[in-house]
Length: 87
Image (cartoon, rainbow, N blue to C red; front, side, top):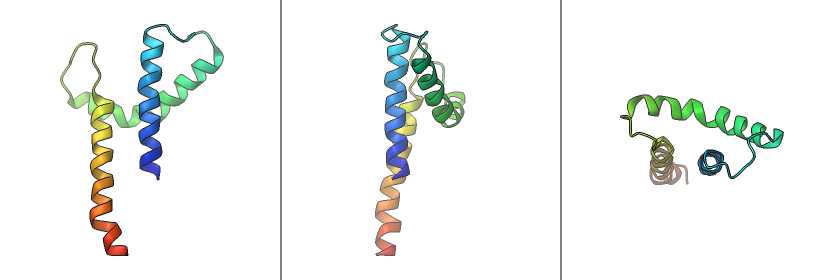
């Protein structure tokens, strides 16, 4: 359940960053700022180590995709090894 929630937070953070970068949302709005801070504080500790390892791709940040793939593999590992052992 926690991995599913974090997946949705990563997706929402990526969409928020695109909207912010293209000035679709008002960056001066206090709610938008607090939402951006929340996404940054929740996702940055996981994304930062991956960004250090990845090569510079210019303006493209693929670290959320890498984290989503890692979450997918962890969920598959849990469903194929741990859940059958418990049941």
